[in-house]
Length: 282
Image 1 (cartoon, rainbow, N blue to C red):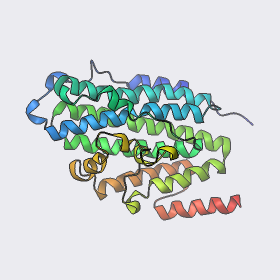
Image 2: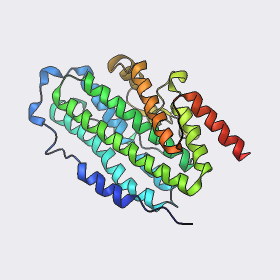
Image 3: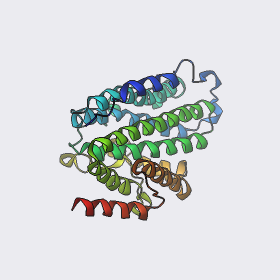
């Protein structure tokens, strides 16, 4: 059987071509202090800490994908860009609200071991997480009134969309390698992550339990200075309402349609497809 080609070299080149820098692409001189409230500044701190959790996520990916050097090599790109998200948010605070700059202890609090998990399910979970983050940050850019942070959130949201596209390519590669085993894993987790409206919870890797020994303090969210921050940010501040949630679900289903090469327009379609895969496996 012909082995799928490595994706890392092509993805590295593509990401390099569109990469932004803090020196040349952030309009620091346009900062308007009158347009940044204390409430808004605090959310920037929380997002900076949350983005720092790419560190334990990368450690998890490298551990659980030891047999896949192509994917692990891509982690060098993903990890760099995710840590840059945390860094640019902290640089914004350092310049304009140094009193809210996260401490090293606050950052280190979100670095903890994730329990080993099936790599295909984890890949799908983070693919959905990138789609959700893209939409969260787009909404955050609209909610903020200060022009520099609006530009920063716009850049970050575009990065998250590209990360999702890269994960999708690795998912297609996994299907080429593992067939229905991969399809079953992706359908199962996709159904879970797209059902957040039913669960009344914003499903994302940062608020899922990942270490049984540390329960209930085994989510990234639970280790923030204010564990209740995420729901407040979504519901009250950036107003991530049913319409925005529906956009996330539509995007997940649209990409799964492409991945599985069949029309999946609703959660019911995805559920039926998952059951069909289960029957074939049985």
